[in-house]
Image 1 (cartoon, rainbow, N blue to C red):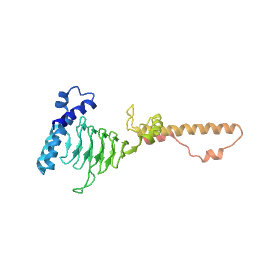
Image 2: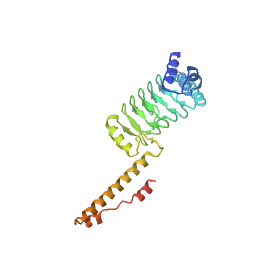
Image 3: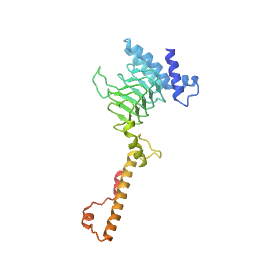
Image 4: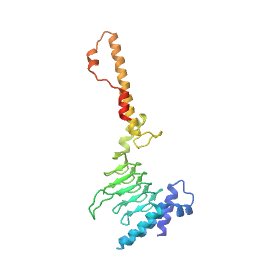
Length: 251
């Protein structure tokens, strides 16, 4: 018991730059308190003391704002940072070295009793603030879940899931795509430096690109006309793009 507690304190000191001392972590970190109480509740649950396990879990929820069902399995050196609003369901499993931020939900989508309804997180998974992982699937080792993502399908090891519903990014495949998207002001991780909605910024970027192409086509058409090449029939049939109208639709 005390060795696990020392491990938990050490992992918090390692991962949280705001942690200044062992005493501060021991007395002021609700994630540490919730995990310690969960171990007691889980022991009661696995030994058939189901009501007592639920009662300890409820006391922990009152004290820390973190709800961990006593049936859930939580690995070693797990760090729940801040923690307010974290919910971990009965059949959920959290792997060693994982990190959960505030507002995370490891929830279920099935009402079948006795079934695997909640997700399994592999080793060293990071789940951003407000993320929801819903269902009895696996999130692979080293995966990252972006803030406010809603994950409803399996995430491969080492991948990143962002958005609602979440899409899967693979480091090798997406690197060039992310670089190109960032040049348009779009961040696939759901964050932008100036706080604008990334999807809206991407759409505005595409609209600006279409408008620039249309202006270039008009200049080319004018140059051809000056050289005696008429393209009146083509330009008459081509649809015109109104960037201002498209911007209103996006806004």
